[in-house]
Length: 600
Ligand SMILES: Nc1ncnc2c1ncn2[C@@H]1O[C@H](COP(=O)(O)OP(=O)(O)OP(=O)(O)O)[C@@H](O)[C@H]1O
Image 1 (cartoon, rainbow, N blue to C red):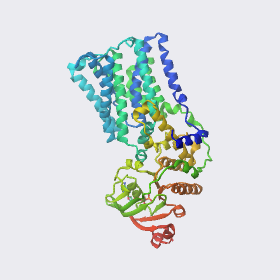
Image 2: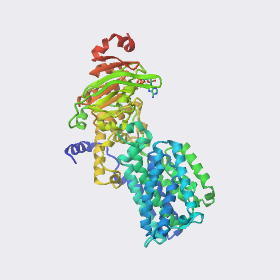
Image 3: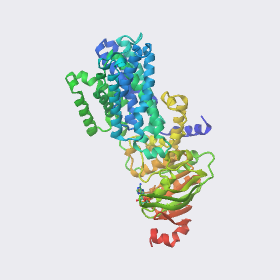
């Protein structure tokens, strides 16, 4: 650990810390511990059900990252189970190559699942919600049809023998322990991912996609890796499922099964691993303890889904979230501590300015900005004001890469890539939004840590296995996020769900999220909207201190008092053009500005 990080960690030792790892893992330990005792009952029937639940959970643990975390409606995931089941069975039976040992066949099936997982997932990069859901169902149909039609290899409608497991996994209980062990590993890995910057990035693209982009999170890269992981787990589950069934036909891979996986995630709760695990166990056991209901399984699942959507939208995870039921104090006031910023911003700052030259952008027939010139200098606070619809937010959106200008250019030393918001964090440019873009279901701390995503160096695999570089990333990003929260005055609420906070607090969370990046430039879009007079004063002091740290600030605001009291330069827009630019004193006296915007 670097000296700087060490100092931070020491300084933070008196603050609320995250839940210890053992409390996070305790419910899992209890569940798996109890399951491991099952053979003591000697009841092989229940052993079979538990084995099935463990296999389903392998698939659902990966699927929960896609559905529950990334918010992608992958409803036809039985496709991957089918692929894994047939690949393992065919390779073990030697129908295309000489017969392979079952565990080798299982490994190959998982690799095929990883590849196919990406193919199934790719449409998610272009299609949303139900359109994507339909494509996954399409894939499920294709795989089943191939299994039916490719008779020489898969046995067609007659089916194929499932792979036989080697000793000691060739007995009912041996196979149970194998599946339980793999399921435990999947739980550990999925949980590690959930608590890593990958997990935070996934929920960010689900609930606050533009904020995720502004934090440098690449949706495409992230989804490809997660689809690979989930695909590999689902195909492995398929291979084990085939072994459990001993004989498979295409009929075994029904839409109901796909629905079971999907609903397990929904009743478990978005953004949780424990919830979907309990959901999977419940849905596997339910038809067994209520045998007459087995024939009604589709009805049962649909009914459960309705009950959950209507009565328990947060799923099992929300029921178990006792923390969020503790009342919060009413008379909370955000009291920033700007002096803390010195600890957060350390190191050299870039001396270059952001420069806009003759930037033009239209929407249909509307010229939103029409030849705007602007310079935001390091360490200076630049106010951007003007009447409603004058082009302020559009200017900010062009700088932050949300829109590509039609004409003109935006440079920070070298040109900034047009329409590439995801590149801005890497260039040291952070932003907030006119309407706060926050992940309501995540804690305040997690929201702020999202801003530090590009600061992490560990790969997906390192996060999955919780290797030292990942743990160091987490420690560093968490320490920075706590420091940023302390700077904006919200450290006491670090572990509270963000959707429990009031509007003014959300605005400060966004600033904290932007500060974690230690930005060279900070673009603030109406940060004072909805704040009280006292809060605006606090905000003003915070922005001044951010400027003192060497960060150039672009402040889009309607609160003229705030602009004139803290800005070094002010640009006034009207109908997309620069009406005036100068110091606050000059702008205050500018005749056209007074008549067009400030009023008599
Ligand atoms: N995505 C869009 N599609 C179509 N028109 C847009 C879009 N974004 C902005 N505009 C139009 O461009 C013009 C400038 O809008 P912009 O939001 O930049 O103004 P603003 O100065 O930020 O206004 P306000 O103070 O109300 O936020 C307006 O006429 C607006 O209607």
